[in-house]
Length: 168
Image 1 (spheres, one colour):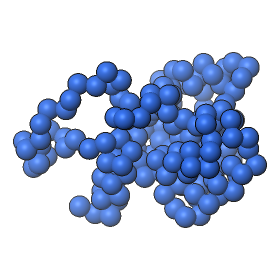
Image 2 (spheres, helix red, strand yellow; image 1 turned 90 degrees about the vertical axis):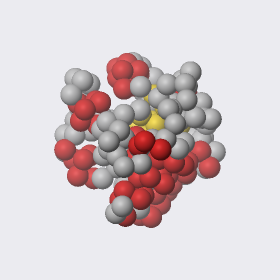
Image 3 (cartoon, rainbow, N blue to C red; image 1 turned 120 degrees about the vertical axis):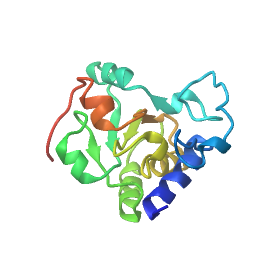
Image 4 (cartoon, rainbow, N blue to C red; image 1 turned 90 degrees about the horizontal axis):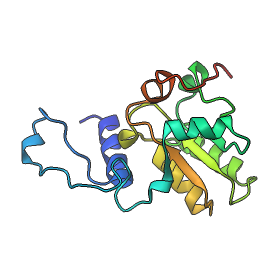
């Protein structure tokens, strides 16, 4: 397993619980069936309010009480396409990106409605989403959520026809 694969495993384990091995993978036969979860798709032992569905966020940004949307993924993805009005604060898997996010957050009210997203890969494997979410929670933010992207930003946002901006 490479460094990225190991990082994705550790982040997936810490953020979303024990990762499941895909069918066909050498370790797949040794696993039990996943337990039934009433909040399917939500991290175990974490409230579903920590995540927002793409359709729900699209409605929020079309309304009058827009959340602050922060991209915490690679800049190249942000330049290619991002959620309208989103701001970029670096890949949260890097010290520089996480420091930039924290520096920006110091100037925001602790009850600000903030949605974080990356979109580089499935949320369960994302090396950026969890560090960003946990950093803001540790700073005392009470209304910070992550955008639920089961596959990636292109598949779960762009391909579904939700609004995007390009560049910056």
